[in-house]
Length: 397
Length: 224
Image (cartoon, rainbow over all chains, first blue to last red; front, side, top):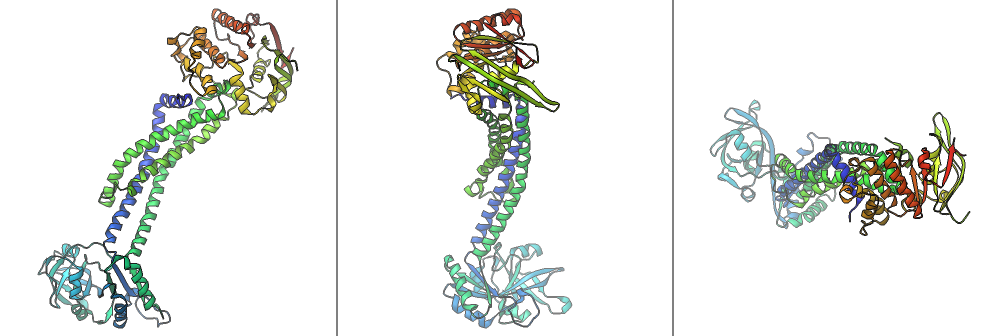
């Protein structure tokens, strides 16, 4: 059916084409900004989730920091160690879930040739090394003077199989020189062992340098079944902390949760900033609609005098702002596909997840917000137009 | 109330509140117009003729007093009902033609029809009316600014008639036209009156008032 009210709205937009295009442009920019930011956040979350879920089978047990009532000792929480007895207990509880192993860890100065720096040094059981690491070059260490190194560290110090690293502080006199026998494959971020930037040697090598035998930085549990994560965590916590809090247990699902929620907060924040552009667009639509009403006062008077209801006048102006919103949001959506893709590529580094519904959903979302903003900006002008006194309106020049 | 009066004003007063003080535009005007009458309202400028016509056309509400259209008191009607009354019972013809500039001549005539029937005219009534006032098909596709004053007023008459109103209210319908065209328009109105429509015309031109059966003179907001 021919809707003459819609026709009037469309013709009004057409005769003020430039003005209408500029008003719609604000909506285009707003929709592009919101959806790009939303998609960026979604893609970041998806890629981090994927990365972390590779390690979802790891449960990390650390000593609870600063046990209450104990003497105020030196050292912060991260320096608390798990004793041999505690480890034995943990093993008894957790070995049915998978492999339990201990980790020695220390951060120390290193020197390669004449280049100095810091690195994390891990001490691990040789069998455990074989189970959890993959080498890209060389072999696993067989003696107490040989180590394997992470790929990032190797790249930074030009380490190759056969290179030598001096560990320890020269000023304190105690240094140890070790030989690189293997380079690890990249493992990415993880909550158990961050091997990419580390030097890994045997337990004997580690205790040879730092002592502290039987005092472990952490105990890791590699689950046979990922679904046991929650159960294992609960059981360890319950049994170990019955009398007093001795250990903390981290499973990667919790870490994932906290990272995802942080990313979610960040995405919302960035989208809110992008939303400010829509506020600007709303002002511009409002302005155009008020101009349209002012210009058409006489026309409104004519329409009212020959029997158009207030609701029809309102409808005419609302149509105008809805059309501006639809056109703006439509163009914005098309552009958002391109611009969002570029933004995701630049900020996340991969567009693998770009076309997933979790990411693309931000386009219709931004469109809806844009159209809603247009309608809201049109409500007051439309109401003003409808409420004009017909006699006054007819008198307008 | 006499059975055949279509419009009845009882002590209608209209006061405009202006910053400089209240202006009494109509002062206790009482007037009865019978069904099928042709009435001319005359008076000098500023006498309240147009204010009176706006009251008759339900475009404005009286400050006090009552206006009956077809026996119904307009005081008891809300904006929606008054608008329907303007749509269905009253046809308005203006001095300045007042066509909608964004619509073609045809669409201007069709507009009140669409407002009333909520569907396009399939009976050919719009075309027929345009033909009756001497606007051909080609001319009907033009927008108002492309038409002459006389042509615009003919379109306006066709528009006023499209919903078959009982009352035609004309505010200086020939005021912006040359005398020959004005005469044609007046003959058209006379013809419509002969076919039974009540016509109220506001004018200060005695030549126009001559067509009417009755002349009501307004001076300083009062019927003389």
